[in-house]
Length: 502
Image 1 (cartoon, rainbow, N blue to C red):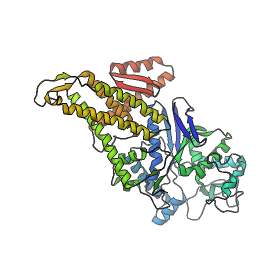
Image 2: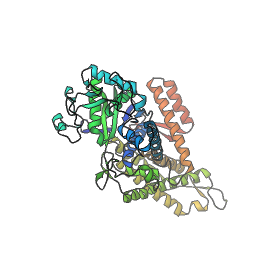
Image 3: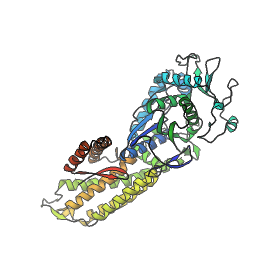
Image 4: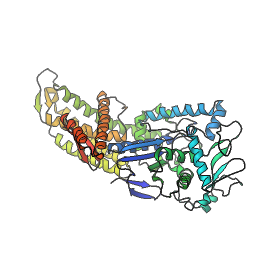
């Protein structure tokens, strides 16, 4: 049973999807006014690994991530650079995709932008006004009234009295309560604006994510995520306004996941503090897969201290895993070649004594890998099991290569060949969830071919699952039988449907 740590309840809970075999996720995206830094990348790498895991377990994943493309910081950057706000946001959205692509992050199903969803945002603000949760000032500003929400603070655990004394409160005597937050801000000279029932203006920060998540995922969805710095006020305010608009305290996101900060010398990395490293700068020195690996070596909820030394350590560790991958593909090339004799003599079948043991170890470690991911997406523990398998692969490979068998015309027999293929599949299944070896430091053409096959198998398995849910057993069984005839077996396991060669 998959367990996730829910920030709302402050404990691990069993995960029960709202819809069988489907997962819906909303992750707060970036405000594109600068190059993304390594702290920005952490939540997106985290959620990419989570998406991959769910997909491998047989879930259909719907993943939405927004762009806050209208914001004070974007407007300020536009003034500094003599550009329009749209030019700035487009420039840094492109920079975002360049950085995330380098980190092997699969694109979201949709990237809604604030500027493209204004009608929905305005409609939600009007709903809150009509229900008495928001009020309009004389100048056209609209605020949410936190005193109307008896449960305000339930995500962060803060009380209104505590918040009133907080350091980040905007001093504005026109507000009913110091913690009231802006839903709509009246237009200022030289700034972009949209027409609304309350006058020209633009949205407050929090309302955009509520409007877009509800629009694209519905009134209830499974996961909402982001960095820990978003718990308050952003996510707190999202919950308040969303549940008020819907009229259901149990609506909106069912599980809240927040990743820990990245620090430099134990201080939170941020653009505003000036102590940050852009992904682009780090990519000039290290491969994207190494950066991704570095981020996933630590559990997503734990703080992660960034340093040159730690990145170098991650690269060394990554290279160890990559070497084992290369060993496996080298063995498979020799198997596929049939005759590996250097002197042209015919092949002689031999038995590789440790292949059976390696197969048993690989299955045990794959199960342990899935168990780790089932425990609140513990990539750090999962990777440790991958290292265990890497060690066994290295031992096996070196024993075969040092034995001299292959150099004197021998070949790996059919039974052991199937085992090596299975071990390769297990190892690459682990790698596929972690998201490495897709752009390996040492490219292997066979690896790209395997990924294509793996991706196609996921599509086939999903179609079979859809047929089973529709009780169309003829199609479901037909898919299974045709795969079996092609030499591929499907296995229904507690971790989901898996496939293997026979």
